[in-house]
Length: 201
Image (cartoon, rainbow, N blue to C red; front, side, top):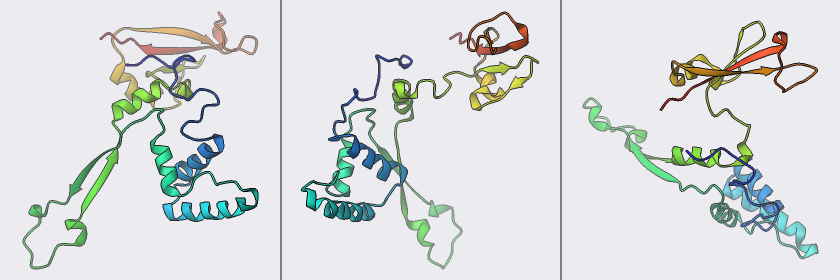
């Protein structure tokens, strides 16, 4: 497993380096159209044509020439690079009962599925300091000062805990107090308990 994220170990570009984009505007444009809006290539081309026309008086180009130009720039981004892989599936006609009617069109079609290698994808997330403190790395149990189990997300649940916890565990005390928030204290009234599994092998 790669080391946990740190300020000196990052899959993010250096500050101010937008390669292969010319500047942050190109990056934000690609991020908006491709990631958030998931705009079709045809609509991207229409938008870029309008953008180009509006910049003619200033003798300036739009962020991208067309949709293909944007796609090629995205594909050449070196940070966190993972190749797409694909597979093809189709319906098994041999399982159908004999019939004089031709099979439905969807039964004779082939379908492509695309994916990234899940293990490499997780490794990229763990080495990207942009995800630091954004998700939990191990299951945990959290209790309030009344010893009531607190649930926040999947890793705070019982199922994840049972999958990972061993017969031995360690715990630490985390104090929540208006006088010393975030520090260790000896006041049981404000104490929360966090238990983490002890990985033995």
